[in-house]
Image (cartoon, rainbow, N blue to C red; front, top):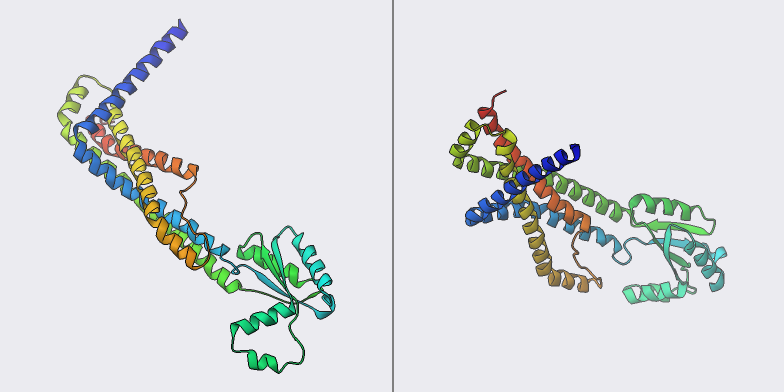
Length: 312
């Protein structure tokens, strides 16, 4: 008996929600132009933080530009008297967990690179011997300023290291810029989320006004606030969900249009630059977030009207 009662109650609950969902879909279809305009506005509002977040990922890839994150270690002459000794040091450092790659630059190669740069030929011709030391070029696994500083200290503590240097100023400036952009994107996303709430709330408020007579009749007939509220909530959820779908489609189109210009920039710097779609988690969060924002906006709009009909 109890199971049958629960089953009937569940059927009734599903029937009511199914009716509300179908009614909301029909309401959107009956006003295609107005619905399309609202969905497009919501899609553009959701698109902007998505697009900026994708651009931030591309900025973060600038850390991998060749040579920007490398640490140069000048080897003491007594520790690298022969090429074998220098390469033994390189093999030792290569085994460190924080090191991704090690390249040894011999004094002869360093001198050759100086000549190729030009402007030093007369000075170099005056030298009887090659004064350049062996240089170890170390690429860290993690190029964050904190990790690079730790690796700098570790290398500087080695007895065979004469001097250690890295362009930490560049890394720190890049990290500061990325932190600023990340904070700006989060603030913009919060502001646009409020904009989505306002757009959906205003749209649902107009819908409530257009159906005021219907709502009044339902209230006089004894309809519960939940029954009257439910179609508007589904409408708001559908607005937000469709806005998320539009945002993802516009994001894919934008990345497609930017693919070739970005690839041309990458070729100029001998890098493979390409803006990728966000992760599946971010895409799913965009759809769900859009739906939830639409739901909340609809709740805010319809609750005031029902409060007037059913004062506490």
